Length: 450
Ligand SMILES: [Mg+2]
Image 1 (cartoon, protein in one colour):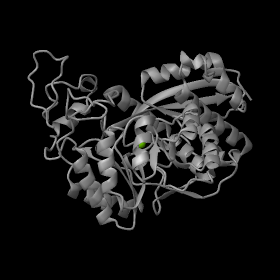
Image 2: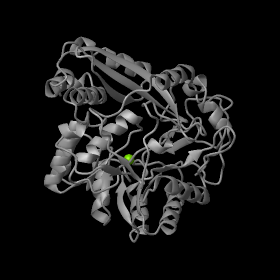
Image 3: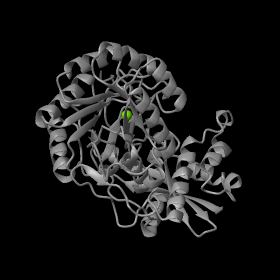
């Protein structure tokens, strides 16, 4: 079998609300590039990668000259063709390789008429449990969908749990002052006393703040403390002071870093991301290393549509040492581009697809609709906050959003236009007092909200 074509199509799929994180926000939509690999057998394999838009499309299709004529069964050869480790110093293609690996596994599975999990050692579970993955949210144009106050967070989580059945809750923090996010986390623990919890501020706390936060939650049902501080040395220092498992999806994302963590441990749980690690198979290999050294593993989410979710489900199905609920942004999506609509949560879990290959197919009408949406609205700057135009995060951060200030719907308006997405400091973007911007000479400077 030979690869005869590689296509890439970027889509913008709407979210419920704008999801806030330590660097800014997801501005009400996910930008994903759908990859299709076609073969001379008439089989088409699906892959997916995030961000980039036009540049991702160009980077993927540029590999046609490397891969046309390649046998999709030859996965290791493909790895070295496009991800040779020394050549990768000049061309880092890890996430592109991941999308192509997904597509080739999809083709192999279709060719053999087996689900991808059969190619990975066979499934150990039929359904993969997920965490609720809670975000603070900016309001939409009409002022709805905001999650800022403790009451809003609890009400949202209660409704989400009723709808999806989650019994593990992950709070994405790093937005508001740590003292306030601690209050939110403790409120979740009080509201759901038998559920599991995890907190992830994306590495923006200082070691001292993280230690204070960690000591305050010692008695709670913590799965782990995820990337509380930046860097293996910071995490190692915190780990030496705190009896809570430390997890990361930021500083152990390849085998060199995994080896470094085995030799001088900084974290206890490795969150495996099928895109960050370059495919499903590298994640399975990494889980094997973790099994040997008795490190925990979990499944990380980098903002998926149904194709990548399928890769996470096949991965989750085959890992013997997956003892934690997986992460997914999936329930934040309003729609999906796969045939049959969004996959369903049942009892906090999603069923592993049983069809050949990844077990998902494109809904071409939906792809067309959301490709149009991408052409109309464009991408968004992941590391900018529509509610704080000139703000940017320090690490450790010292300038937090103010939980007492409601962002206005104008932030949503700013986020929804292509022009504003590339220039988030436009006059319609309000909202909160901000750090002085040294690059904006002459701009009015507000008092910082510390
Ligand atoms: Mg994380």
